Image 1 (cartoon, rainbow, N blue to C red):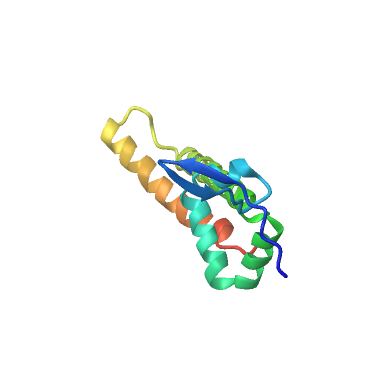
Image 2: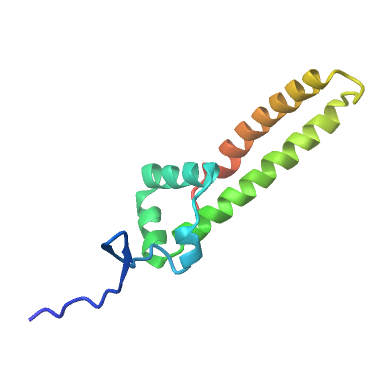
Length: 122
């Protein structure tokens, strides 16, 4: 005879929801995933399903995706700043021109980080 599962529930709005975790870190499960983390998650799911399944079964998927998301955001900012400094634009120019340059450098940096960091098998 099969034993019933021992699952605890949370009551919200008069309904009971099972307390299930995707990973070993409950904070990582409840924290929304950012842009680059979602991109990496989709990439792993589509291109490397066996690695995705392995990470998910080990409970390491969501903490890793949060780490990728944080590192990618930092890399985009750092790379955009380095590119602006290397280009040597003067700070005396118009504010709109500075914003346009900053956005253009950020877009280039984002493309590089996505290709070289986010879309990599983990």
